[in-house]
Length: 284
Image (tube, rainbow, N blue to C red):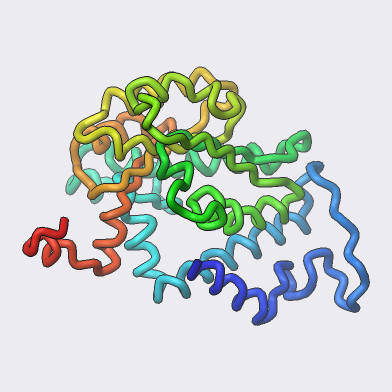
């Protein structure tokens, strides 16, 4: 993929994956690196390494998409609830424009995701951060190379952040085809059987089967996951364009649970893809 090529160039350019530009274990003389222990305390050195990997990923994405603004347009602003990790607890100016409590929802949504990741990082007994993915063939990666499907790419891109903390990023991909009669109407009840009930975050992609509003399904999934041990935030991945309907209401109502919904075509449109011209000639 293009991101993989960019990542290869970034590493070849010199940081080697470590916080100071050398090998990950800090050995600069070519000596064989010992395999670091997994889990344990988040030491200051590990914290610096986590930050260095995070900065590297942001720089990689900015480079891949052409600029930081375009990367934010295509990734961050393609969610129904825009991610803002600097949002104050309350902003009267925002609330006057978008309605009472909107700024608080933006803060709470980001804070829930930060809390989820921070708890995993500082827990000395943790060796894994687990993301579960349920959905159709799009989640499974059918008609695609397994190497290039979304869960595989996310694991490669995001995994070094957790590795720097002495942990592994585990993505449990439970995507399936819909030819057996499964769909969003029944599979969302089975999340704790399809993936571990101990997941930190749950991704849902049955949206290609929904063919219209499915707010009830999304809300049922949100509420049932709150009974899991870690109460994982639910993130919906939608292959269509953003519609300020049921998901818009749910993103506000369940901000404290970290709920959000991503719209793929909205991301491409934000990046400049001309869907209007395609519609005009019947290509939508």
